[in-house]
Length: 427
Image (cartoon, rainbow, N blue to C red; front, top):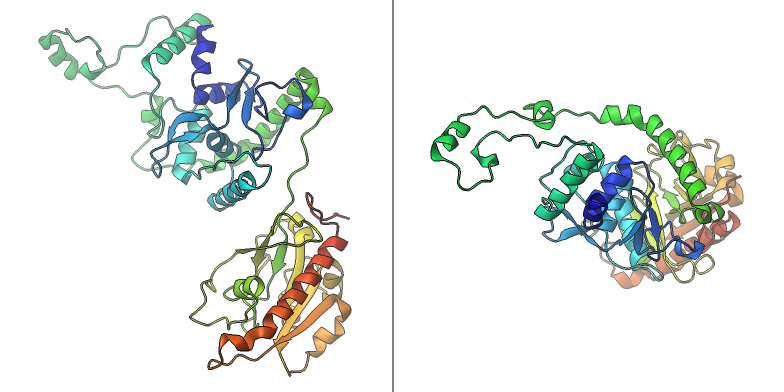
């Protein structure tokens, strides 16, 4: 009972013990999980985290933990710690993108509110190591209060997890008695300090063991699946109401990497968001041409009139996973076939049966023959030629063209099955 009491007072200990027991934690909207309506598997709307082992307990996701980030002196809350654990295998860029997406959902209508703190890569590694039981302390984790630490140690002795006699710490610094004899203190100071397994395994050079985690991933996934099945058999309410589908994915827009393209990574954001064309090499642009990924937002009333949709813009599909191709909603092209060499559909006619093609050229110039041959799957538009001496008022037609492009993208997305809370239909 002392162990349960100690764990209840500390969110990190309870989360660490649940992971050790392979007991899934359940985000909920209440301290109880007796009703299916109270089980909410989304961290964006849940307000509590329910632990089923070693004890039945629900803690607020806003509860502060003993984990403190270097960038913020305020203790990190349980929602941020648990989210970092869920994303322990994500790369830094994937993790940061996930944090931004979750914060947007928290702030949106129906969200639980608050902000998930983005931990640095080293902080995430330390946190994961501690939660997995690989270490007992971390520079980012405050020590336990003396009463909880004593209660936890006593419970471990009672359960047989630890010996009944505490190990003697070398050196006078480990002696807690204030009335120690000065001669004994001098002897203690001369003792050889012995390191534990953590200090012995850490050499003078940092060693990357990330490959071990990749090798262990299939075994961990199998164990997690077995634990989930066992948990469903214990909790019939969750079995009757399975986890809701994942949130709507972000649609993707592909640009042409050609140097002759009028729209590139440096000026696409200005054009599609502000409705103003600026040459890609202009010094007035805020976006960099070397950026590998951009995000723009747009409200599409026919899909979701209340929430803006976030679009991902890239100029190469090199980092694409196979399922990403179903999320491509537009491909900007200059009419050069080599652009599609690394695409899933390399034939233009087949490509533009699956997604919308967009060609942007100068007003007054003829449409390339290749673009004409691709048929109605490609939207053609022409912008006024750029003049450095002309003012911004001369670009009034740009917004009309941009609105036409967005209208075509929206119609294409609706035909592919995009809805307010779901992505495209995969056929």
